Image 1 (spheres, chains in turn blue, orange):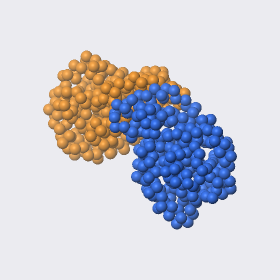
Image 2 (tube, one colour):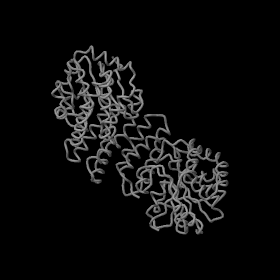
Image 3 (cartoon, chains in turn cyan, brown):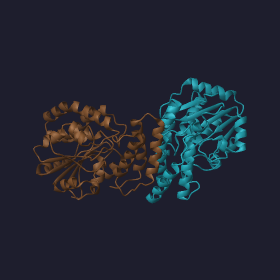
Image 4 (tube, chains in turn red, cyan):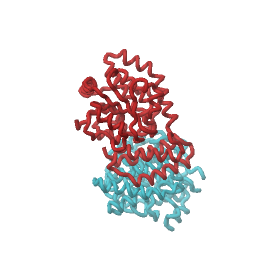
Amino acid sequence: MKTYLDCIPCFVRQALGASRRLTDDVAVQETILRELIKCMSKLDLNKPPPYMAREIYRLIGEIVGKSDPFEEIKDQSNKIVLDLYPKLKQIIEDSSDPFVTATKLAIAGNVIDYGAKHDFDVNDIQRFADEAIHAQIPSEAMESFRRSVSQAENILYIGDNAGEIVFDRLLIEWLLPKEIIFVVRGAPIINDITMVDAEKTGMSNLVPIIDSGSDMPGIMLEMCSKTFKEAYERADLVIAKGMGNYETLSEEMKHIFFLLKVKCSVAADHTGHHIGSIIIKKNTEV
Amino acid sequence: MKTYLDCIPCFVRQALGASRRLTDDVAVQETILRELIKCMSKLDLNKPPPYMAREIYRLIGEIVGKSDPFEEIKDQSNKIVLDLYPKLKQIIEDSSDPFVTATKLAIAGNVIDYGAKHDFDVNDIQRFADEAIHAQIPSEAMESFRRSVSQAENILYIGDNAGEIVFDRLLIEWLLPKEIIFVVRGAPIINDITMVDAEKTGMSNLVPIIDSGSDMPGIMLEMCSKTFKEAYERADLVIAKGMGNYETLSEEMKHIFFLLKVKCSVAADHTGHHIGSIIIKKNTEV
């Protein structure tokens, strides 16, 4: 998916939101916005939005002098959802269709996003989970996902954000003993997960973890490691979480199910779903 | 008032909104955004927001090849409110306190703004008028405004947008036979009024009209004509409509009443009123 003109004001808004989250120093915030404007002059609309997002958040990291500016925020998100974990696990086990509930919760977890939704408050996660359980997902999409999972022999599950990974863990626990590899980013970018988050949230005790080999907040195959690309080729089903993975992989000729919350007008237009929807989208190229 | 960091994403969003309003050609829209980004690199935060807005909308005009790109939109706004004029006049005359009703309606008219609120639909104006009549304005501010108007001998009334000028006419008709000069912009910018709008809406038959001598969507005195500055000096009361006039004049040592609708978070912080409020604000320096 290419970058749309609507992404441009959104990038600027995101950068301002991120700069405020990371520093109280208005002079630094101004520097970030001024450098961002310079950086935007190189914008290539043929690249997917995460490509520019990566440039922006790397720039912010350089200016605030932190290689992982969202580290504390990621730890906090992981901790909050880990505290909810027993309750969420119980909800899944008690439900009439645990696969559906676990899937809905995994998508709901995608609300924890400091890129597209910089004003998100992680303390609201319980409310989002409750809403997700009652959300309607077309049964055709859900049953297609269930069938694909059931038939798959090698699943590659591409994660997205900190906190959200605990919801992914709940779904993966339900999918085991399927053969599943879980993918994290190769280096910190926004609040996307890296190997550290897989370890801190118990995911690494559950399934093998690989990283993408890239700090892209999405998956641009040409920028990924050989290890990742081999795992991707081998997988007969890819589960890809969140907008960044959708935006970078939606045109790939591969059996992919995207599980995401639609957070902006561009994704809404592209997916055909309203902002705020939690959706399961099968790669239409397959 | 200076330009705040929050104005930066808003400028980009405005430029995209305006470009879409003025052309369906996505390539032209992209050119506008790219040129805007270059233009923003010169941004001076010590200048008020209308200074940059002027640069942006001039740039848009150059790219779409029109010296007055909002001409049709302005004509449409004037026409829609002129159609409502008899009804609005009746509402004022039938009300228990016509001065208050006319003032509230004049402020309500400030909703017609293609800068700050690019998604505004002029057809909603009747609804905004109804809301305004029922809106609460602190009686202290209203009575202070009433006293000042009653005591003033030379009123300078600085208008803002097309369409809105018809609401201004209703208030001015109620204030006559006071000595009032009405001010328009010196050249087209966004949907701000010029001499043409004063003529098309009957304002020029009512009171003398002067222009500011500048195409600023606000009043930066150093950029105004000698004629305007003399009228400004001579006035013992200035009534200034809308955010652009507020943002440029709020720090002047002059007896000014600002009548505006608060349309963004920056103006909300600066005025101390919620977004959406219709307010009367006396210059605190006086």
